[in-house]
Image 1: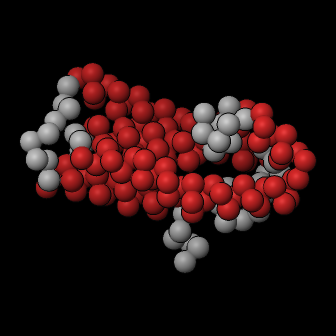
Image 2: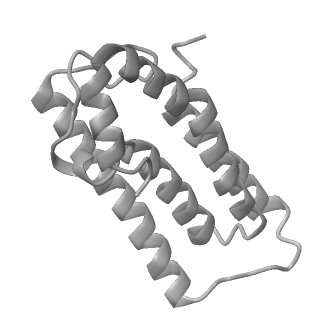
Length: 149
């Protein structure tokens, strides 16, 4: 189960729901406008860049990126100076961007639901592991850097 209980799988599932809503349940709601498509591109592109920056930090510090595993190092550099969870933030940005790109207005409600899922399934358990593993270092980091932004 842990092999499929990963954030990209949740993002893909929510994206499929958003796409399905856009294709089959539009209910004549639309945000289609060049500005909306531009914003969608910024959100998707920003999310991809954010995730890429985070992956580079994981590689640099030679620690696991798998959410259910305990990392060997506490990453506090790069994008992790600004957000404790840049990959999860990237997932949320990408979903919001896809909803706008596909003009899936009703599916925008999935964005806060994804935030909730990510917090409950991944962030809270990860933070608990980090507190046990890195103790005072993590407590200082947690005080200094916000969870999302």
